[in-house]
Image (cartoon, one colour):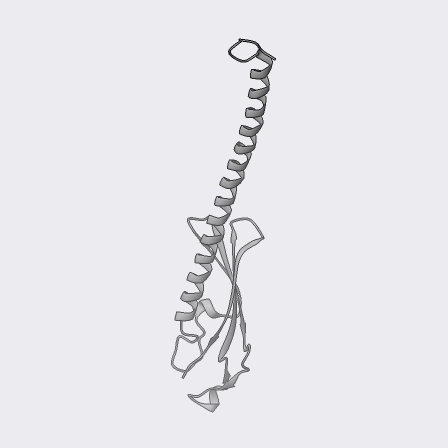
Length: 146
């Protein structure tokens, strides 16, 4: 116990600085983690925006580019398609499958032209350029309306 002394001993100051330092290191670690989460959230948000944008674009396109229903729009042909977006940071891939969920139907223009595809299942994925893990996925059915 102190009688009349004012101030702190050197040992008390060293212990206080040590406790303060540990606290500041924890705050710095939390700050770094928070910044990383912000970056991840931005990337997921951008990927969702790109997936929705591609879906809107594909939904706005006609399945066929001619009146006889013989030429399918290039972006809606069955198979896999890829496009780079976001200043080259992301890759949008969409896979088109014909006749899902509705099977081919007779051509309404002429029965001599055979049957036509009236529905397409479209599956969209957005990933960072050069990575295989998709950040966003979207699926929809496009139907030919008469």
